[in-house]
Length: 127
Image (cartoon, rainbow, N blue to C red; front, side, top):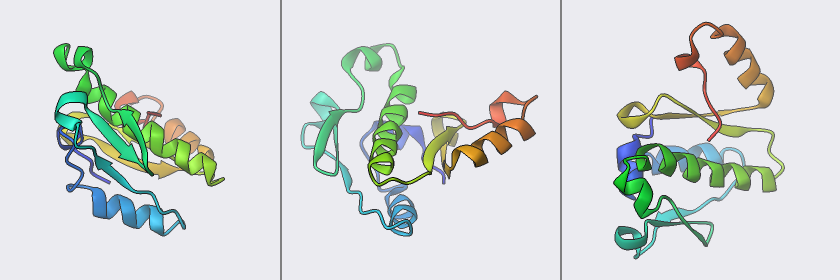
């Protein structure tokens, strides 16, 4: 699923919200997510009524928010998957405007990693 780190870092989930919601619903998961009213100032996001900071001002000033924001977002989604006893987790691939997310079991991840052993760019990574 194409994510686009820029959209996510700006608190705009419209780009991928429908696809992500459909993927989770097919697995019996109801996960809600949105930017809070404090997003512009505090960079807060809410997932299942739990508020957390997507990135901080330091990440903003050193431009690491492009990487940190998606990692924190999908790390939080993975926590929700774990709570639901799902064996799947989100893995990220590429970055920036090409950022993608893949839902895999550990076994599937290991197969992909082995196939792409010599090409690290093609190996998904845990957020």
